[in-house]
Amino acid sequence: MILYRDQLVERTEIHIDIEDRGYQFGDGVYEVIRVYHQQPFYLDAHLERLKRSAEAIEINLPYGFNQLKVKLAELVAQNQLVQGNVYLQVTRGVASRTHHFPVKSEPILVAYTQQNDRPIQALNKGVHTVTTEDIRWLRCDIKSLNLLGAVLAKQKAVQQHAHEAILVREGVVTEGSSTNLFIVENGQLLTHPANHLILHGITRQIVISIAEDLQIPVKETHFSKEQLYQADECFITSTTMEVCPVIQVDDREIGRGQPGKITRKLQNAFYQLIS
Image 1 (cartoon, rainbow, N blue to C red):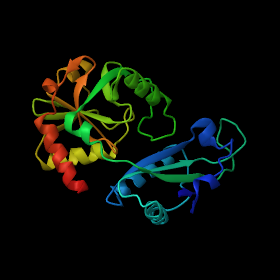
Image 2 (image 1 turned 135 degrees about the vertical axis):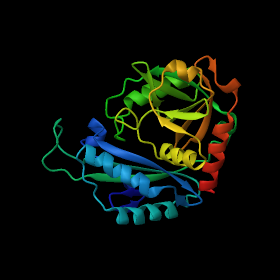
Image 3 (image 1 turned 45 degrees about the horizontal axis):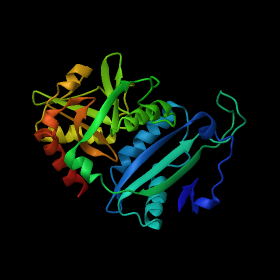
Image 4 (image 1 turned 135 degrees about the horizontal axis):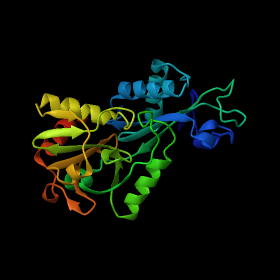
């Protein structure tokens, strides 16, 4: 079953108009919400970010949070989703094709579920990554449907048999193509400031909170690709990847090619949250 507007319907019953502005312009916003044990994880935080993203591009969400929570719960239950993802997007709606906002259009909400197991092998062993230039627009804090820059970066990673592409803008490491990035330097976590150049990841925020509880220093600051290469540890975070060790960047081994102690502490604390 798919949530379309405010109704649960079969996927075959959904019709997307060719002049939906999400289809033609990427004019919309989205969220991916992890489900553990049939329960959406940090749902309020995801919906708050959806609202912020929508407000940033002047889209009014068609439903309030309470109604949306009820519908998403129905969606998870109807699809018997125990562990996986809920994908949710809102477009500006259907209107005759012009670049400027239409005078009248009704936002369209769609949500569906995906069965998806935790990436246990990657979490245990770590992943390889490559660096590439960050060519995305300057409002990466908006979780918009305009993802072509991220898609091209991820494709580069895939072509080089890596899991993720780490983005570098004017010498500064920003984040991954679909993840946030942390390094460990002298016992301290470093991650890019939560400004317009990165997405304010929900898992990123959780990890920072966990680190503070564990009395692990966290500094939101710029760092270079050379610092990344020389990091004691490195890991990526996201809704689907949780806290995932990075053991290689380009041709450089990180932390002797094994997940580090601080990364493991954060992983264990995160696992306690989802359990």
